[in-house]
Amino acid sequence: MKIIIGLGNPDVEYQYTRHNVGFLVIDEITSRYKIHLSIKRCYSLLGEGNIHNERVLLVKPLTYMNRSGKAVKSILDTLNLFSTNLIVIHDDIDIPLGRIKKKLRGGDAGHKGIRSIIEYIGTGDFSRIRIGVGRPSKGEDPSEYVLKTIPDSEYESIRESINKAVEEIEKII
Image 1 (cartoon, rainbow, N blue to C red):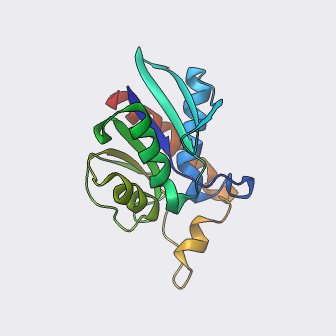
Image 2 (cartoon, rainbow, N blue to C red):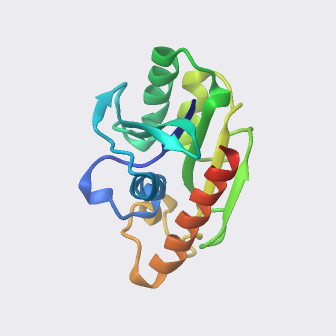
């Protein structure tokens, strides 16, 4: 079973921010594959289903981004699975808007959600889909930048990235 985790913040005020693109990818998968997120467990909202005949668990952690590791560790421990079963989707300000990158393992590259996961599970040995949200303007705080609502002028690029991310997940599966 693959565990597909979209990183974000659970409050409605963050729903359409750059920091929540991981959640938006999960939303797209639920729509395409008719998988309902209806289980609250392991500090997360979960949904089980199939993608190309492969069993998957879709996850939106209900912890805030910087505490994502708590939810991920709980899921791995509860299901007795390994980090190699994980595909984590998250925003990345070091990737240009509209682009994505796949990473099979490694460090956190400054992303606090990924840092939390690595700290909780003790390894960086998991797949990631990094979605480019562009860089903040000179002098703009990166934390404030990623927590701003996605402007209309960027929404189409983000939408394309979400579709590319789903395609990459399908390839991994």
